[in-house]
Length: 167
Image (cartoon, rainbow, N blue to C red):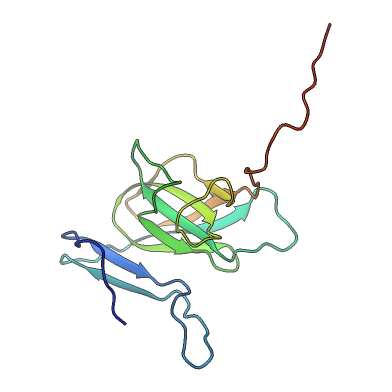
């Protein structure tokens, strides 16, 4: 495998290549599970983790967690989760659980979304998403984070009828 990068690597930074479902075995085309490559351009590898569960606000009998991602965005005033990819990302397992590893200490915003089009970005008009409303401070391993997502599709909401009330 050859990995070509589009930009220079930063000094003293841990990098994680999360291959998701992109690498498969030759014999049966089964995707490798949770395959990732971790390395650092410094002397240490960042090792903090954030883990938890994603659920729905309005659950169905059988939930589908395929293509559901959780991302951490560096907390900043100009965060636009609809046009930028997260700094850290993990795929949710079949039970809705996630674990993001190799995190550097800092303050982040946590979001979960369905990535129907594999863009690694939230599409608010077509992909269900949810978030934790307050920033999370990662200075130790965090467990049991809960993110609820809304299944609503907003692209087709429109006013069907207007009523005028008179006295």
